[in-house]
Image (cartoon, rainbow, N blue to C red; front, side, top):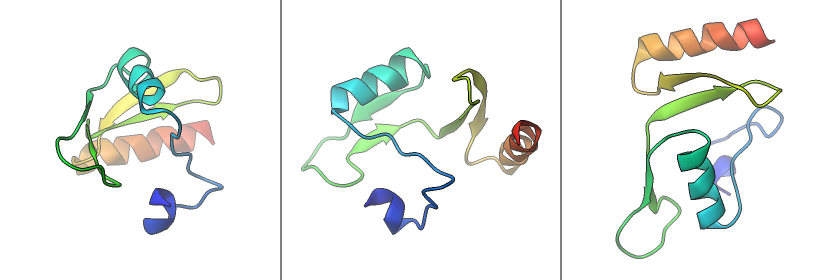
Length: 85
């Protein structure tokens, strides 16, 4: 539902799903990023999380972290994506 709301192409994007603890453990332990539950009633966006995009290659290696609010960082991410394709 979240992906559909943003028009994400399922052939190109994967969204994490599963128990919140499992996802939080992955984000904290593997991606080394901040994530916390947001106070208040549960909603589709009830999680406070990092603004970083993490590029993971097909072998599950982290290729880089990119600030999603920085146009230069997003451009670097696009360059790295081209190298992987």
